[in-house]
Structures are given as structure tokens and as C-alpha cells.
Length: 213
Image (tube, rainbow, N blue to C red; front, top):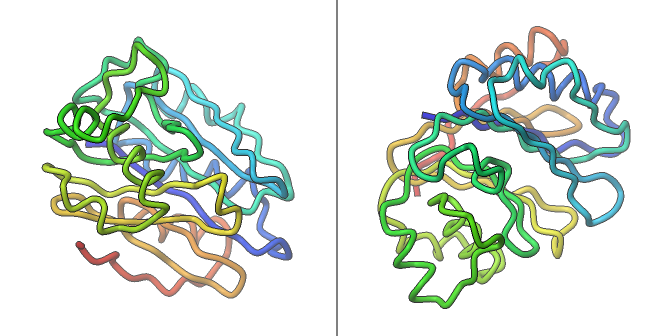
């Protein structure tokens, strides 16, 4: 079990970006303690990534997201494949132009990487999640590309080629909730996490469970 969360906000949204990031991280903290990380995109296509071993408490106070950030990914890890002592295995994970986060496990990741001729972003990587984001990059965001994945997944990713889009997808076996307000959208592994966001950021979110697909 891992936890994922994040947001996509209008540039005019008055929500404090760092406070929102900290709130989301605290809300999913119990879902993983092996590693923690976040990524954001501001007014340029480049995606900034910060990650480290340990639980949410080790990163919470030092989080810093620029005021002009429009998109954010947050992850806490309870690892299954790809030891967290190798930083490249921890989330957010980069593959080419894509940076993403994953809750779940993919059993045929090595087969996917081999059959498509993908090269690992970093040679020491063994994490199963990279196969998802390699497919996402190759397919340019088409969710149908994930049909060959065997296992469970709820994922979110950013693509430096698509600067205005935050992608979400859910397969079998892992929860994913989204909540919309006037100036943006929040997502998280649980409905309770979105309710915490509402309370601390004083928002009213229209919450829906993201469908399996």
C-alpha cells in the first residue's frame, strides 16, 4: 500500500501552494513510511522533483512549492519491488518526459520493458512502476496503453510535452478520489484525505471516486 495525492490549480487560485502540499502529504502519511516525495510544475514545462527515504514527517516541514506552481504530485511509499535504498526506485519516478506516482504493484513490468525495448531511466532502477510511465510516455497519455499491465494501480503523472495537463488513471484494486472546486482539482488515495484538505484549506470540493478502467 502506498499513498498518492496532488492538485491542478488555476494560476489565479488563491490557495497557498505549500500549505496545500503539506496538507495532502499529512493526509496520506499513514499509507507509507519507506520513502516520500513530491513533484511540481510552475510556469515552465520542466518538472521539479524532491524525494527521500523515510516517512512523511521527515519531509513535511521542509516542503516548499512556489506560488506560481499549477500542478503537484505527492507520494508516500510502502515498497513492494525496488528497494528504497536506491533513490531512483522512489517516487515521483521519471521516465523521459514523464514524472509520475503509483499506488499498487505491476507483476509484468520486466516483460513490458523488454518487449517495448524501453531503457531504464537509470541503470540501477528495478521498481515496477517505471513500466507504467514508460508506457505513458510512448502512448502520449492514452490510458488504453495500460491494458497490458498485470496487477493493480492508481496513478498520476505529468508530461513535460503537455504543460497544461495532469493525468490520472485507475486500474483494479487501488482507490482514487478526485475533488473539484472553482479554481482547481485535488486528488488523493482516499475520500478522507480530500475531507482533510477541505477542512484545512477552507474549500468546498465536489468529490467523486475515480472509476476503474
